[in-house]
Length: 79
Length: 79
Length: 144
Length: 144
Image (tube, rainbow over all chains, first blue to last red; front, side, top):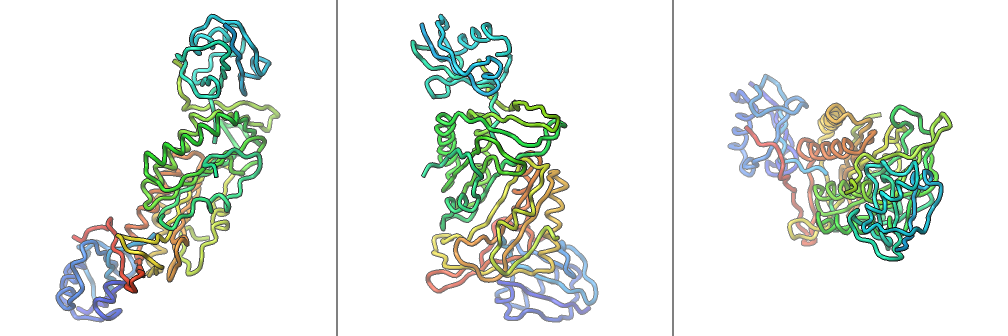
Protein backbone atom coordinates (compact mmCIF):
# COMPACT_ATOMS: atom_id res chain seq x y z
CA UNK A 1 0.00 0.00 0.00
CA UNK A 2 0.99 3.62 -0.47
CA UNK A 3 1.60 6.04 2.42
CA UNK A 4 2.90 9.56 2.78
CA UNK A 5 5.80 9.99 5.21
CA UNK A 6 6.83 13.35 6.67
CA UNK A 7 10.06 14.09 8.55
CA UNK A 8 10.55 16.86 11.09
CA UNK A 9 13.44 18.83 12.56
CA UNK A 10 16.52 16.59 13.04
CA UNK A 11 14.84 13.83 10.99
CA UNK A 12 14.25 16.14 8.05
CA UNK A 13 17.87 17.21 8.13
CA UNK A 14 19.13 13.62 8.45
CA UNK A 15 16.98 12.36 5.58
CA UNK A 16 17.48 15.44 3.45
CA UNK A 17 13.83 15.84 2.55
CA UNK A 18 10.55 16.94 4.13
CA UNK A 19 8.38 14.15 2.84
CA UNK A 20 8.13 11.18 0.52
CA UNK A 21 5.42 8.86 -0.73
CA UNK A 22 6.38 5.21 -0.42
CA UNK A 23 5.00 1.80 -1.24
CA UNK A 24 5.19 -0.35 1.89
CA UNK A 25 4.06 -3.63 3.38
CA UNK A 26 4.51 -2.30 6.94
CA UNK A 27 1.41 -2.95 9.05
CA UNK A 28 2.18 -0.61 11.91
CA UNK A 29 3.72 2.82 12.38
CA UNK A 30 6.64 1.15 14.12
CA UNK A 31 7.29 -1.22 11.24
CA UNK A 32 7.18 1.69 8.81
CA UNK A 33 9.70 3.59 10.96
CA UNK A 34 12.07 0.59 10.88
CA UNK A 35 11.70 0.41 7.14
CA UNK A 36 12.52 4.12 6.73
CA UNK A 37 15.47 3.73 9.10
CA UNK A 38 16.79 1.10 6.70
CA UNK A 39 16.29 3.33 3.65
CA UNK A 40 17.97 6.42 5.12
CA UNK A 41 21.27 6.47 6.93
CA UNK A 42 21.22 9.08 9.68
CA UNK A 43 17.61 8.44 10.54
CA UNK A 44 16.70 6.22 13.45
CA UNK A 45 18.55 5.41 16.62
CA UNK A 46 16.46 8.09 18.23
CA UNK A 47 15.25 6.34 21.38
CA UNK A 48 12.49 8.80 22.19
CA UNK A 49 10.90 9.54 18.85
CA UNK A 50 7.15 10.05 18.46
CA UNK A 51 4.77 9.28 15.65
CA UNK A 52 1.51 10.81 14.45
CA UNK A 53 -0.91 9.48 11.87
CA UNK A 54 -3.17 11.91 10.01
CA UNK A 55 -2.42 14.72 12.48
CA UNK A 56 -3.17 12.70 15.60
CA UNK A 57 -0.49 11.44 17.96
CA UNK A 58 -0.35 7.65 17.59
CA UNK A 59 1.15 4.57 19.23
CA UNK A 60 3.98 2.76 17.43
CA UNK A 61 1.74 -0.29 17.22
CA UNK A 62 -1.07 1.63 15.43
CA UNK A 63 -2.02 -0.08 12.19
CA UNK A 64 -1.69 1.80 8.92
CA UNK A 65 -4.11 2.28 6.06
CA UNK A 66 -3.74 3.18 2.39
CA UNK A 67 -2.93 6.88 1.90
CA UNK A 68 -2.25 7.54 5.58
CA UNK A 69 0.03 10.46 6.29
CA UNK A 70 2.60 9.31 8.84
CA UNK A 71 4.63 11.96 10.70
CA UNK A 72 7.94 10.98 12.29
CA UNK A 73 8.95 13.26 15.14
CA UNK A 74 12.44 13.19 16.66
CA UNK A 75 12.56 13.61 20.46
CA UNK A 76 10.60 16.74 21.25
CA UNK A 77 12.08 19.63 23.22
CA UNK A 78 9.52 22.34 23.79
CA UNK A 79 9.73 24.95 26.52
CA UNK B 1 9.83 40.53 87.10
CA UNK B 2 8.50 43.14 84.70
CA UNK B 3 7.80 42.44 81.01
CA UNK B 4 6.21 44.35 78.18
CA UNK B 5 3.39 42.52 76.38
CA UNK B 6 2.12 43.50 72.91
CA UNK B 7 -1.08 42.27 71.28
CA UNK B 8 -1.70 42.09 67.53
CA UNK B 9 -4.70 41.99 65.18
CA UNK B 10 -7.54 39.90 66.70
CA UNK B 11 -5.70 39.79 70.07
CA UNK B 12 -5.43 43.57 70.21
CA UNK B 13 -9.15 43.89 69.50
CA UNK B 14 -10.06 41.21 72.07
CA UNK B 15 -7.94 42.75 74.81
CA UNK B 16 -8.80 46.32 73.87
CA UNK B 17 -5.24 47.58 73.99
CA UNK B 18 -2.02 47.40 72.04
CA UNK B 19 0.35 46.78 74.88
CA UNK B 20 0.76 46.62 78.63
CA UNK B 21 3.61 46.32 81.10
CA UNK B 22 3.00 43.63 83.67
CA UNK B 23 4.61 42.18 86.76
CA UNK B 24 4.75 38.40 86.35
CA UNK B 25 6.23 35.24 87.81
CA UNK B 26 5.84 33.38 84.49
CA UNK B 27 9.06 31.63 83.51
CA UNK B 28 8.24 30.92 79.89
CA UNK B 29 6.42 32.65 77.05
CA UNK B 30 3.71 29.97 77.28
CA UNK B 31 3.17 30.57 80.99
CA UNK B 32 2.90 34.30 80.35
CA UNK B 33 0.33 33.67 77.63
CA UNK B 34 -1.77 31.56 80.03
CA UNK B 35 -1.53 34.33 82.60
CA UNK B 36 -2.71 36.94 80.07
CA UNK B 37 -5.51 34.65 78.94
CA UNK B 38 -6.68 34.64 82.57
CA UNK B 39 -6.50 38.44 82.84
CA UNK B 40 -8.41 39.17 79.65
CA UNK B 41 -11.63 37.55 78.55
CA UNK B 42 -11.67 37.15 74.78
CA UNK B 43 -7.99 36.41 74.56
CA UNK B 44 -6.75 32.85 74.27
CA UNK B 45 -8.37 29.75 72.91
CA UNK B 46 -6.47 30.46 69.74
CA UNK B 47 -4.98 27.06 68.97
CA UNK B 48 -2.42 28.28 66.44
CA UNK B 49 -1.06 31.43 68.00
CA UNK B 50 2.61 32.40 67.73
CA UNK B 51 4.93 34.25 70.06
CA UNK B 52 7.98 36.44 69.56
CA UNK B 53 10.39 37.76 72.15
CA UNK B 54 12.35 40.95 71.44
CA UNK B 55 11.48 40.83 67.74
CA UNK B 56 12.53 37.22 67.18
CA UNK B 57 10.07 34.38 66.71
CA UNK B 58 10.24 32.20 69.82
CA UNK B 59 9.09 28.83 71.14
CA UNK B 60 6.36 28.76 73.81
CA UNK B 61 8.86 27.15 76.17
CA UNK B 62 11.40 30.00 75.76
CA UNK B 63 12.36 31.42 79.13
CA UNK B 64 11.72 35.10 79.87
CA UNK B 65 13.97 37.79 81.27
CA UNK B 66 13.36 41.09 83.01
CA UNK B 67 12.20 43.80 80.53
CA UNK B 68 11.63 41.38 77.67
CA UNK B 69 9.13 42.53 75.09
CA UNK B 70 6.79 39.62 74.38
CA UNK B 71 4.60 39.74 71.26
CA UNK B 72 1.47 37.62 71.10
CA UNK B 73 0.37 36.82 67.55
CA UNK B 74 -3.02 35.30 66.76
CA UNK B 75 -2.99 32.70 63.96
CA UNK B 76 -1.28 34.32 60.99
CA UNK B 77 -2.94 34.56 57.58
CA UNK B 78 -0.59 36.12 55.05
CA UNK B 79 -0.94 35.72 51.32
CA UNK C 1 18.14 45.11 47.33
CA UNK C 2 16.13 43.15 49.85
CA UNK C 3 14.69 39.77 48.80
CA UNK C 4 11.57 40.20 50.89
CA UNK C 5 9.58 43.42 51.07
CA UNK C 6 6.38 44.79 52.51
CA UNK C 7 4.58 47.48 50.52
CA UNK C 8 1.55 49.63 51.16
CA UNK C 9 0.85 50.20 47.47
CA UNK C 10 0.03 48.07 44.41
CA UNK C 11 2.83 45.67 43.41
CA UNK C 12 4.38 46.47 40.03
CA UNK C 13 4.67 42.96 38.56
CA UNK C 14 6.84 44.04 35.63
CA UNK C 15 9.44 45.60 37.91
CA UNK C 16 9.24 42.60 40.23
CA UNK C 17 9.88 40.05 37.45
CA UNK C 18 12.79 42.17 36.19
CA UNK C 19 14.63 41.44 39.43
CA UNK C 20 14.45 37.69 38.83
CA UNK C 21 15.81 37.74 35.24
CA UNK C 22 19.06 35.84 34.86
CA UNK C 23 20.65 34.57 31.65
CA UNK C 24 21.77 31.38 33.35
CA UNK C 25 18.16 30.46 34.17
CA UNK C 26 15.85 28.41 31.98
CA UNK C 27 12.91 28.39 34.36
CA UNK C 28 10.88 31.02 36.20
CA UNK C 29 7.96 30.30 38.53
CA UNK C 30 5.78 33.05 39.94
CA UNK C 31 3.05 32.74 42.55
CA UNK C 32 0.48 35.43 43.22
CA UNK C 33 -2.03 35.48 46.04
CA UNK C 34 -5.17 37.29 44.86
CA UNK C 35 -8.01 38.79 46.88
CA UNK C 36 -10.91 36.37 46.43
CA UNK C 37 -14.51 37.59 46.30
CA UNK C 38 -15.71 34.93 48.74
CA UNK C 39 -14.61 32.94 51.78
CA UNK C 40 -16.55 30.22 53.53
CA UNK C 41 -19.72 31.17 51.72
CA UNK C 42 -19.57 34.90 52.40
CA UNK C 43 -19.09 37.58 49.78
CA UNK C 44 -15.89 39.54 50.40
CA UNK C 45 -15.83 43.18 49.23
CA UNK C 46 -12.25 44.01 50.16
CA UNK C 47 -9.63 43.15 52.72
CA UNK C 48 -6.96 44.55 54.91
CA UNK C 49 -3.59 43.15 55.92
CA UNK C 50 -2.04 44.04 59.22
CA UNK C 51 1.71 43.42 59.12
CA UNK C 52 4.17 43.58 61.98
CA UNK C 53 6.85 44.79 59.66
CA UNK C 54 10.13 44.47 61.63
CA UNK C 55 9.63 40.76 62.18
CA UNK C 56 7.84 40.03 58.89
CA UNK C 57 10.78 41.38 56.88
CA UNK C 58 13.36 39.56 58.99
CA UNK C 59 11.48 36.26 58.85
CA UNK C 60 10.57 36.70 55.17
CA UNK C 61 14.22 37.11 54.21
CA UNK C 62 15.05 34.06 56.32
CA UNK C 63 12.47 31.99 54.40
CA UNK C 64 13.94 33.09 51.08
CA UNK C 65 17.47 32.25 52.22
CA UNK C 66 16.23 28.83 53.32
CA UNK C 67 14.63 28.21 49.92
CA UNK C 68 17.79 29.19 48.03
CA UNK C 69 19.95 26.96 50.25
CA UNK C 70 17.53 24.05 50.21
CA UNK C 71 16.61 23.94 46.52
CA UNK C 72 19.69 25.56 44.98
CA UNK C 73 17.71 28.08 42.94
CA UNK C 74 19.44 31.13 41.48
CA UNK C 75 17.18 33.98 42.59
CA UNK C 76 14.11 34.31 44.79
CA UNK C 77 12.12 37.37 45.86
CA UNK C 78 8.76 38.11 47.44
CA UNK C 79 6.62 41.16 48.15
CA UNK C 80 3.63 41.26 50.50
CA UNK C 81 1.04 44.02 50.72
CA UNK C 82 -0.06 45.74 53.89
CA UNK C 83 -3.18 47.83 54.46
CA UNK C 84 -6.42 47.95 52.51
CA UNK C 85 -6.77 46.13 49.17
CA UNK C 86 -9.39 45.78 46.49
CA UNK C 87 -10.57 42.56 44.77
CA UNK C 88 -8.13 40.82 42.43
CA UNK C 89 -5.15 42.87 43.45
CA UNK C 90 -2.10 40.74 44.24
CA UNK C 91 -1.67 40.49 48.03
CA UNK C 92 1.60 38.62 47.70
CA UNK C 93 3.96 37.77 44.86
CA UNK C 94 6.74 35.19 44.98
CA UNK C 95 9.20 34.74 42.09
CA UNK C 96 11.93 32.12 41.68
CA UNK C 97 14.35 31.65 38.78
CA UNK C 98 16.72 28.71 38.32
CA UNK C 99 18.46 26.71 35.58
CA UNK C 100 15.76 23.99 35.63
CA UNK C 101 12.07 23.99 36.49
CA UNK C 102 11.78 21.32 39.20
CA UNK C 103 13.60 23.27 41.86
CA UNK C 104 11.94 26.55 40.81
CA UNK C 105 8.47 25.04 41.44
CA UNK C 106 9.57 23.48 44.74
CA UNK C 107 11.26 26.64 46.03
CA UNK C 108 8.30 28.86 45.08
CA UNK C 109 5.90 26.51 46.83
CA UNK C 110 8.15 26.38 49.90
CA UNK C 111 8.34 30.16 50.17
CA UNK C 112 4.59 30.77 50.00
CA UNK C 113 3.79 27.84 52.34
CA UNK C 114 6.30 29.05 54.92
CA UNK C 115 5.28 32.69 54.50
CA UNK C 116 1.66 31.85 55.22
CA UNK C 117 2.60 29.84 58.30
CA UNK C 118 5.36 31.99 59.81
CA UNK C 119 5.01 35.67 58.93
CA UNK C 120 3.28 37.98 61.43
CA UNK C 121 0.62 39.07 58.94
CA UNK C 122 -3.12 39.04 59.53
CA UNK C 123 -5.99 39.36 57.12
CA UNK C 124 -9.27 41.10 57.90
CA UNK C 125 -12.10 40.46 55.47
CA UNK C 126 -14.89 42.99 54.91
CA UNK C 127 -18.14 41.30 53.89
CA UNK C 128 -21.14 42.46 51.91
CA UNK C 129 -23.16 42.26 55.13
CA UNK C 130 -21.13 45.11 56.62
CA UNK C 131 -19.34 42.72 58.98
CA UNK C 132 -15.57 42.38 59.13
CA UNK C 133 -13.56 39.46 60.50
CA UNK C 134 -9.99 38.34 61.05
CA UNK C 135 -9.26 35.24 59.02
CA UNK C 136 -7.65 32.36 60.85
CA UNK C 137 -5.02 30.38 59.06
CA UNK C 138 -5.52 26.61 59.02
CA UNK C 139 -1.86 25.68 58.87
CA UNK C 140 -0.26 27.62 61.69
CA UNK C 141 2.28 26.26 64.15
CA UNK C 142 0.77 24.91 67.37
CA UNK C 143 1.59 26.29 70.78
CA UNK C 144 3.46 23.98 73.14
CA UNK D 1 -10.25 32.37 22.78
CA UNK D 2 -7.99 29.33 22.60
CA UNK D 3 -6.30 28.06 25.76
CA UNK D 4 -3.14 27.04 23.94
CA UNK D 5 -1.45 29.19 21.33
CA UNK D 6 1.66 29.27 19.20
CA UNK D 7 3.14 32.67 18.42
CA UNK D 8 5.99 33.86 16.23
CA UNK D 9 6.49 37.09 18.17
CA UNK D 10 7.38 38.09 21.75
CA UNK D 11 4.76 37.02 24.33
CA UNK D 12 3.01 39.96 26.01
CA UNK D 13 2.99 38.77 29.63
CA UNK D 14 0.62 41.49 30.82
CA UNK D 15 -2.02 40.56 28.26
CA UNK D 16 -1.47 36.86 29.01
CA UNK D 17 -2.00 37.26 32.77
CA UNK D 18 -5.12 39.33 32.11
CA UNK D 19 -6.75 36.24 30.61
CA UNK D 20 -6.27 34.28 33.83
CA UNK D 21 -7.76 36.90 36.19
CA UNK D 22 -10.85 35.68 38.03
CA UNK D 23 -12.44 37.12 41.14
CA UNK D 24 -13.21 33.66 42.47
CA UNK D 25 -9.50 32.78 42.48
CA UNK D 26 -7.12 33.30 45.39
CA UNK D 27 -4.08 31.75 43.70
CA UNK D 28 -2.23 32.27 40.45
CA UNK D 29 0.84 30.29 39.35
CA UNK D 30 2.82 31.20 36.25
CA UNK D 31 5.67 29.26 34.68
CA UNK D 32 8.01 30.73 32.10
CA UNK D 33 10.64 28.87 30.11
CA UNK D 34 13.54 31.21 29.39
CA UNK D 35 16.31 30.90 26.82
CA UNK D 36 19.39 29.94 28.81
CA UNK D 37 22.86 31.14 27.83
CA UNK D 38 24.40 27.69 28.20
CA UNK D 39 23.57 24.02 27.75
CA UNK D 40 25.81 21.10 28.59
CA UNK D 41 28.84 23.33 28.91
CA UNK D 42 28.36 25.24 25.66
CA UNK D 43 27.55 28.92 25.36
CA UNK D 44 24.21 29.44 23.62
CA UNK D 45 23.76 32.68 21.64
CA UNK D 46 20.17 32.21 20.55
CA UNK D 47 17.75 29.48 19.62
CA UNK D 48 15.05 28.49 17.25
CA UNK D 49 11.87 26.52 17.79
CA UNK D 50 10.36 24.46 15.03
CA UNK D 51 6.69 23.80 15.73
CA UNK D 52 4.36 21.51 13.85
CA UNK D 53 1.48 23.81 14.56
CA UNK D 54 -1.67 21.82 13.65
CA UNK D 55 -0.82 19.05 16.07
CA UNK D 56 0.90 21.22 18.68
CA UNK D 57 -2.22 23.35 19.09
CA UNK D 58 -4.55 20.34 19.22
CA UNK D 59 -2.38 18.48 21.73
CA UNK D 60 -1.65 21.64 23.74
CA UNK D 61 -5.36 22.30 24.22
CA UNK D 62 -5.84 18.66 25.19
CA UNK D 63 -3.16 18.98 27.90
CA UNK D 64 -4.86 22.08 29.28
CA UNK D 65 -8.25 20.36 29.33
CA UNK D 66 -6.66 17.42 31.15
CA UNK D 67 -5.13 19.74 33.76
CA UNK D 68 -8.45 21.51 34.38
CA UNK D 69 -10.32 18.20 34.71
CA UNK D 70 -7.65 16.55 36.84
CA UNK D 71 -6.87 19.33 39.30
CA UNK D 72 -10.13 21.29 39.21
CA UNK D 73 -8.50 24.64 38.54
CA UNK D 74 -10.55 27.57 37.26
CA UNK D 75 -8.51 28.79 34.29
CA UNK D 76 -5.38 27.61 32.48
CA UNK D 77 -3.64 28.97 29.38
CA UNK D 78 -0.30 28.55 27.66
CA UNK D 79 1.58 30.19 24.79
CA UNK D 80 4.65 28.74 23.06
CA UNK D 81 6.99 30.60 20.74
CA UNK D 82 8.05 29.42 17.30
CA UNK D 83 11.00 30.60 15.22
CA UNK D 84 14.14 32.46 16.30
CA UNK D 85 14.50 33.84 19.83
CA UNK D 86 17.04 35.86 21.75
CA UNK D 87 18.44 35.18 25.23
CA UNK D 88 16.08 35.59 28.20
CA UNK D 89 12.96 35.90 26.10
CA UNK D 90 10.15 33.65 27.31
CA UNK D 91 9.90 30.59 25.04
CA UNK D 92 6.79 29.34 26.80
CA UNK D 93 4.41 30.72 29.40
CA UNK D 94 1.87 28.70 31.39
CA UNK D 95 -0.65 30.36 33.70
CA UNK D 96 -3.13 28.75 36.08
CA UNK D 97 -5.63 30.41 38.42
CA UNK D 98 -7.74 28.65 41.04
CA UNK D 99 -9.40 29.25 44.41
CA UNK D 100 -6.47 27.69 46.33
CA UNK D 101 -2.77 27.36 45.63
CA UNK D 102 -2.13 23.62 45.86
CA UNK D 103 -4.00 22.71 42.70
CA UNK D 104 -2.68 25.77 40.85
CA UNK D 105 0.92 24.64 41.45
CA UNK D 106 0.10 21.04 40.51
CA UNK D 107 -1.80 21.94 37.34
CA UNK D 108 0.90 24.37 36.17
CA UNK D 109 3.58 21.74 36.71
CA UNK D 110 1.47 19.13 34.90
CA UNK D 111 0.95 21.37 31.86
CA UNK D 112 4.62 22.22 31.37
CA UNK D 113 5.76 18.63 32.01
CA UNK D 114 3.26 17.23 29.51
CA UNK D 115 3.93 20.00 26.99
CA UNK D 116 7.65 19.23 27.02
CA UNK D 117 7.02 15.51 26.54
CA UNK D 118 4.15 15.53 24.07
CA UNK D 119 4.11 18.62 21.85
CA UNK D 120 5.72 18.38 18.39
CA UNK D 121 8.17 21.22 19.08
CA UNK D 122 11.94 21.07 18.57
CA UNK D 123 14.65 23.37 19.78
CA UNK D 124 17.79 24.18 17.83
CA UNK D 125 20.56 25.86 19.76
CA UNK D 126 23.09 28.18 18.11
CA UNK D 127 26.42 28.14 19.91
CA UNK D 128 29.22 30.66 20.22
CA UNK D 129 31.38 28.26 18.17
CA UNK D 130 29.17 28.82 15.13
CA UNK D 131 27.70 25.32 15.44
CA UNK D 132 23.99 24.64 15.78
CA UNK D 133 22.31 21.54 17.17
CA UNK D 134 18.88 20.08 17.82
CA UNK D 135 18.34 19.54 21.52
CA UNK D 136 17.08 16.13 22.56
CA UNK D 137 14.57 15.96 25.33
CA UNK D 138 15.42 13.58 28.18
CA UNK D 139 11.87 12.75 29.10
CA UNK D 140 10.24 11.73 25.86
CA UNK D 141 7.97 8.74 25.40
CA UNK D 142 9.74 5.57 24.26
CA UNK D 143 8.91 3.84 21.00
CA UNK D 144 7.39 0.39 21.24
